[in-house]
Length: 282
Image (tube, rainbow, N blue to C red; front, top):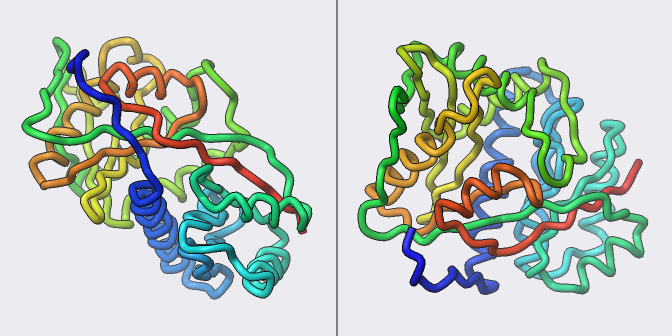
């Protein structure tokens, strides 16, 4: 990390690009769920530049993502998605970037949405050849389909035991629901990595490329192997590969004040913007 560098500035255009690829990811993951279930329960509905997605009961893909960077949604559009979520017995959860039109927040609160949480979006400009950091004893490599279940197990295990630092997440998912969600995200065009310690898989991660954005779509370390530099190694490998693939920015979403945020800021990521999480019950 260069101490003399200028912090990455995020204007509305960059935020719009990041939110657009986030909406694409949620849509693809939700569609993967629909294929896995082979039923007609779910939906993906475009709205004001974003998407309203329902994958399955309890899924982290049940949300409105990317809203508002393409104008204020109409009352009719909001009516449609609220009816769709209500038909599934699920609250409407909107993730609203603070760089979106302020009129959207006012509109949602007038309709009964409540602010329940925040999440941070951080970014790193990619240029040159980012350094690959591999602590002693740790090996990181791309993960093939032959070890998918082992990758899934370590990622789900890590996600199920989050670090207790920062603002707690407003969401908790049963292990089966979490495993299904990770499986579906893994089929949404992401590249998977494993970290090994003494030949044993102790961590896993993934990222997705779209429109020059490298979305870091999750990384987890088995609880027994934390504090060994696994997260640093997984992060540096993905950044190096994303830069080599001509991505110009890497982005990650974290809980405010979390260990994950601290780790990526140490690597040079800057806080770009915050998303407000607003919820309306059916």
